[in-house]
Image: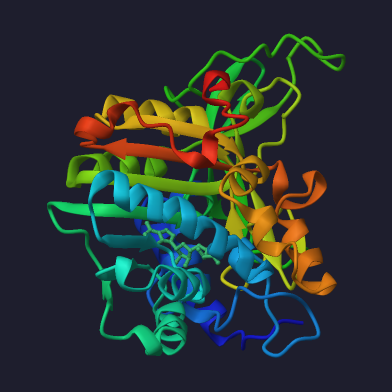
Length: 385
Ligand SMILES: C[S@@+](CC[C@H](N)C(=O)[O-])C[C@H]1O[C@@H](n2cnc3c(N)ncnc32)[C@H](O)[C@@H]1O
């Protein structure tokens, strides 16, 4: 059962089928994921009314929860780090990618008041933009939406759970050979009813580091199947930011790890995951358009793309360290127990505290070059990247 009608999903299926046919019978998973999530009017983020929220049994029902929804103290604490970055760079604008329901923008504008001259949202989801517009009505004179970044801009850039929503390429190693895993049309009488099948093509693409595929207990003469992802779209995104952000700081918050963990020989099934009605499943080929598809972030890759493009890595740590360093605990100490319990989930190791990381990147810092942002004052892990 889903909360959307299946009509857009059927149209989306037709669109992908046509694209696969036009491409000669095969498309890469990155293209499939891009269509499934962002095809205009049909993809998950275009057609799904309210994907993000606290849980089942609420109206409207949602598919997954993010930190700004979990507790307003996430954004209120982030505000201290944003204020510091605005001060250090002498800038007055915030740019948020993928603003979801607008909750984080609402809290930042409430806490930082006139310190923010203008708040710009860049989002691919038409449905969410409307939700954001309603939520941000009290600040409507200072908020705007753009579909493209200007050639030059400055300020603080934010992206919470945006990198994980960017399409990834799948690479699979079988018998010590690398293939790109893509999608083809399956037999029309498929017993699963799924119109798609995985289809692998030999490729010159490789993961960014060598993986010890000989290791592990279950290796036979043919080796074993090892599936992973690479993230060209996220790297291109960082390149564009680096080219256009003339002065400012970028905070990227997401789930992921450094590359030695990402491409660990034991992580042989990759990290692609789908979310629907607060349940996770690993099969992106079913319920296409009706559920979210994500992949973890390789933070080493993000740091390298950033450095190659001229940005400075200012810090990298867990969400727990970042929020505690930015002053979360004194902010919540006198709050009611229920509120504190939700805020605790942001930093508890088995909830969002450890899997989620925060990376800060600096552009055109000039005299602020030696500055170490407060969010990384204790527990900076940049050396682990
Ligand atoms: C998982 S949601 C996170 C929403 C919100 N930041 C939150 O934490 O609740 C991902 C969001 O990123 C947006 N997105 C994905 N790729 C994007 C891109 N290249 N530019 C702008 N927004 C993007 C999606 O449309 C969606 O709104």
